[in-house]
Length: 485
Image 1: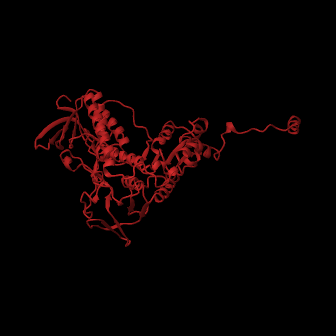
Image 2: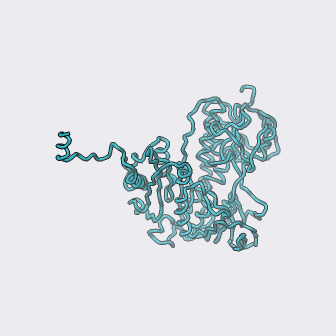
Image 3: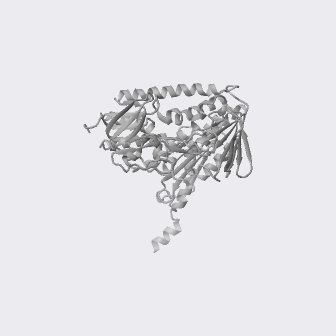
């Protein structure tokens, strides 16, 4: 590797690029991170994960959403909530994230460079800065962690103010009174439900008859009921025919003949891999129809052995959490360092209002595989903590194998779902059974107690293990007959 400028060059500083760089730094290798933006952190820090989750927390706090079951729907912590109120906390959080990231790079001797990177040869990359300068660098190994960018079709008249994508949305000058969101994917659902909590009139349009299909259908049914009750007008099976920017409002015409009018439109129907500027032809790499790169899912090696790719640019699951793991594993593999493999079960979190989080298989998956199972259910309103918090909704569902009694999947919708799911993740990865939830004590009162309730719900309907079956003692006449025999 000494023939090259660096042992590893990483393009992109999002979650996977960040963790790969820090891992390489800890291995005392020469590592460089290149990012086209002047501030590191990637989409996750600046327009994606951290901003949207910070915005959600700000909305729930200022709107008094969590206290409305006690004090009424008109209750608010701040009467007039403005866009500046939302942005204030956002900018403070982002500044902190960037500061922590830069400190981690410095502490682990990770070099950085701002500019647009493109390959010029198998082991050579060119970086063009905003000042017009170009620098060529070489490396033994490369990691592509460029993430994704918003999908912007021609039929949508984006203007950055009233017709926006997920990136523009965070820069709104004022909170609209009405909002149309096109695309009921994770991003669309999160923003639609957040702004509904601000009492904005929200219409969520999805061309397909269903949404979030990777989530258990029972959970989606419960979630759909809640968001509609909270004021989201959910239009499923409604393909968009035309979007018109009418100045003071946006007019959306649907193929079924209906019209939707709102002050602002958020287009959130998909993202594309940010690979177009990399000149991948120079190294013989190809991408799919969404500009994503195919990799070996154990090592994150591409079809070109010395080039790796991680994070959203490789597609599903496109989570910041899994990207962090992918970056570490890829860096270790690239630098010939043995490491622990990723665990098979990871949690999926959707930071909507209410939250959704799952781990393991859904009921539909179990049915497709023909696995005999039992279901355990718990409602948050059944827990004392739920009453204390004023929770009227929320559900935890667990799936258990009838053959092995092992946990096969857990789905949660409601307050704290993305935190609670980690109990399920631990039990799943340790191959735990329904007995764990029956045997163990959970803090009282907590929402985690729902695991105990759901566990007992399933346990009481599952076959009793032989060691716990009650053996009836034979009666005296029976004993006498046995002796005669």
